[in-house]
Length: 376
Image 1 (cartoon, rainbow, N blue to C red):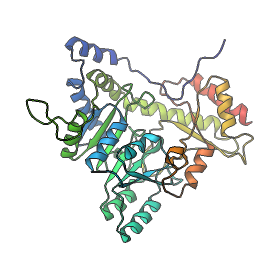
Image 2: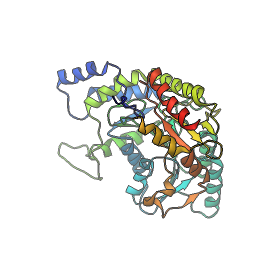
Image 3: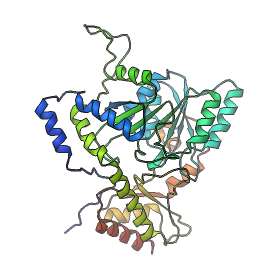
Image 4: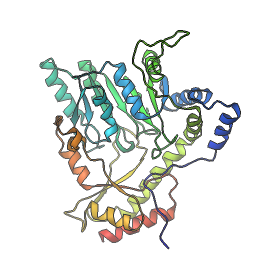
């Protein structure tokens, strides 16, 4: 009999979701918006330390609205991390703007602050500053926000934080996603908590959230009839999904602890293998370890990343390469990238291991056994 499949990062329900959902059905408040949406926004603000929050249909929608509020439009340039998922970049292109990619640094695998600072200084001298910077907190670890914020503030360039993967992480004791003009989070099915699909936009600027809320509800003007002075979008989160989110959010500390435990076990079980290392944890904060990522150096290991991935798949275990950098993606091939060698190296050698918070000790041992056998 085939072994049960081990997924990369499956949803993990608490058991309390059904009670929240039953309340939705009992009240017949099924439509988008409602008391659970309001409560989810308030509870999320408390969880991350944000001033205001807006629950939305996806993290991509949140990023799109943040860029819209900043006035990003055709021909504008927006700097963004190259080592990320395409959803960090697509909203820039939705608006007719041009992404400009920046390489990673080795300490956290996130945007290189030195590259960013040098680029902004050059552009300031040429009077050609970008309209915004989007920094991605990759795989649950914060970028080095101090120097990134300093460079942005020096040149008056707004910073948006893509914290889709980083809920529950910290930077100098605070939640990433709460430092820039706006932060975005995702509750997709594979994230550390999930509403099946959904996202959150946070900001300390009440006007930003109020404008984004209007845009997310088809930009209806305050009038007794339907009147619109801006183009709007249908980006609202339903009351049902917000109810799920409330139950999930209450379990966030346990979910972070479980994923960090997974990382520690993998490191203990596999860290002695030649050529194997793991995503480092930078000194400036604590990662949520959304995914555990190992790198395999083919010059020191008997097999490379793809051989290990295929060996795991043969045993019905899902694993994936690290994100393919955006500057290598066919759809973004015409856009500039500063650097790129670090991100390319991580893509060549990085493998994401099953990391769900519901993994058992047996699951972890099964994954490790396949990896160890392949690399022995």
